[in-house]
Length: 458
Ligand SMILES: *Cc1c(COP(=O)(O)O)cnc(C)c1O
Image (tube, rainbow, N blue to C red; front, side, top):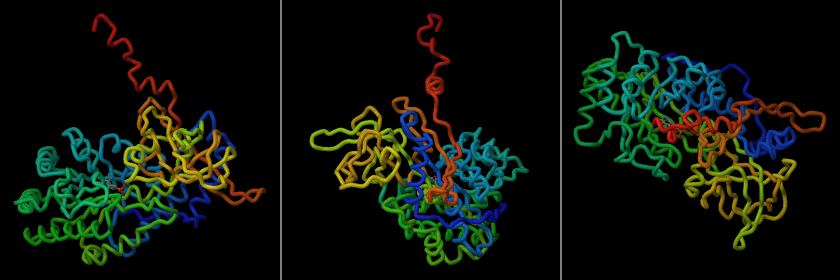
């Protein structure tokens, strides 16, 4: 495993996130990145990303061998991945598409980890040929890898286990329940012995992997799962009488606070929880791999959207905006599990004042449930105003949903420089992803086969 030191670029100390967002919204509106023609866009705070990566690296001081990877699904955008690569991160991928993005972004194969839960033979062959690390999901997959693995393969190979320590507050985000689809369920009858036999049979199996959960899981639960995995590694090595398990991939899943600006829990709190629950983990006998997604990016991004209309229905104010289920899918479908803070901005992109009025913040999709915030007290929104959905840097605008043939929104990176002549910070934007064109929407909807179903020959 090659270890990347964190980038030596200075990490700026940053103003409160919501103050930074306010400066960016104002400039995005002034420069037309947000407005009638482009009524929704995503924004990424590049200095914020650098600072989050630095905080992660600083949380593991003195740990001899640790590779921090970024879970690509949390922000599957090549420029974001390249920024993270330059900051010294590796990359966790879970599909052929994500592997392609990671390679295009410039990650060395030695710092890429492939975790897809349903790897095809072709996917395994390709991963072995490229030399990325692979975590097998189950023992049948270990057998597949054994059959496909050339003798000179350089890929580190691990096995994902499910320590079955239980679920967190969000069922869909809990991967260590008794019946989770991920990994080898360690507490099932005979499972531990089967795992040990697999390691005995395959000396190239050198890692254990566990990703216990994500949003809604406590540090204690995550640490308990990692503790179980560590003890299994110790047991395998003791039983085999050799140090075969040399690496522990401890997953990601640090929850994010969506309620306000504060980052909590911090990476330092995570490392401290692990240190006290699993003291042997950091003593250098195991190479560690982490896989963080949401906790690195969520608070470093937001969605800005135009309020197209504001109306009243049954005594409720409703703002019809351009940010709905196409870009805030989870929040719309599971509003209790994924509540988002919403900010109100006026037509010039300045924070709105005024007494709070209970309003629904709705999106542009044609189904009644397309509401990102229900009965939210906010300064009264009017047509031409803007809303901000905070903390949406991971799993939101980067992963849009094609419902209603709504185009993927543009994404911009931003940096705040010193104050200009007017005393306001200077904002610099960089394009990350272009807004999808209508030509592209049609092309992705089968335009090339337009006649396929009416052609008498077919
Ligand atoms: C999604 C995922 C992660 C990242 O989870 P976050 O909650 O975004 O930190 C890490 N490892 C695996 C295997 C995953 O599937």
